[in-house]
Structure formats: structure tokens, C-alpha cells
Length: 223
Image (cartoon, rainbow, N blue to C red; front, side):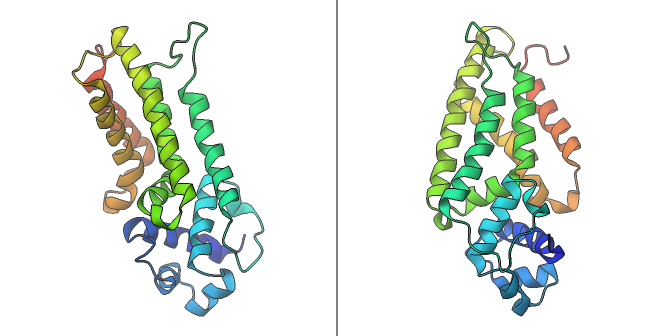
């Protein structure tokens, strides 16, 4: 792929996350990517094309290795929905594995690990969609539906872990689930751009997040 496109991907990702899509100008992306503003319009048809480019490049890890025709056009909603669905369905195939008795096949710690890995891998797309819903319409709606489904699956599993004695008993389990997910989101998705100076490697962030949650919730966290 055109090297300047990779630079734009990095610059636009950071700006869309920190400033928001509406508050980011093409000239700011150009400056951060060290690309002339005029050249940006040879590379992309406009800011909306940059937005969808960033989402596709995050949701499909091979996209940045493809030869993309220039100028890059805005991806249609159907394409974005297809890529988002492939990503979220991949998560559900790993997170909602059931035994023949219809019980969760993953342990609590395994579930946390899967959640963290996906949140870290796709955090740019997930956070941009979450923070810029007004610019993404149906894509943002589909993302919210996937999050609702995730809560449903995780709440059912959490209640099972508690009933089996793997996770300690807590009052208001659904509210604790919010705490669990917020911890995952903070360390996997928000630390990279909200605290960039910390420069915490993703494996260390995962170690910290899982240490916090297993010690908070497992009946025997050191087993």
C-alpha cells in the first residue's frame, strides 16, 4: 500500500479518538501524517473517506497491505456493516462457547482474556464508532446492538460462574458486569490514547487488567 496511507491511518486514528471526527480537520490529519494538505485530496475524496478507511483498516488487518485505488472513496454502509459483523461474530464464537449441557465452556479468566484481546486488537474502530455515532448511522446502531448482545451473554455466564462457586457472590451482578467491562475497556481500549505517555505494552496492560479482575472476583484467584 501507498506508504502515505499508513501515515494517514495512524494520524487520523489518533485524532478521531482524541478530538472526535467532527472536530478534526483534514489539514490537521495532513500535518500529523506529514503529508501536504493538497496531497490529501489526491489520496482521499474527503474526510468521510478517511473515516471509513480507518475503520476498514482496523477491522480487516490485511486491508493496509492491499493496493487501494486512489483517491480512496468513502466505503458504503453495507461494506462497513459486513466488516463489523465479521469482527463481532468472531468474538461471539469465542466468548459464547457452550458445552453439551449448555454451560459456558470458558472459565471466567478465559472469558476475560478473550474480551481483552479483541478489545485491544480492534480498539481503534470500536472507540471511533462508539464516540462518533452521529457520523456513522447504521454502523453505530449495529455496534450498539452487538454490545447489548455481549452484555446478555456475559451476564448469563457471570451468573453461572457465581452459582458454581468460581466467582464470589456479589450483590447486583449486572452492575458488577459493567465494572468488569469498564476495566477491560480502560486497559485495552483507552489507555493507548488517553495515557500515551505511559507507553504501556499491550501484554502488560492485559496482565494488569486480568490481575485486577481475577483478584476482585474469583473465589480462589491464585489457583
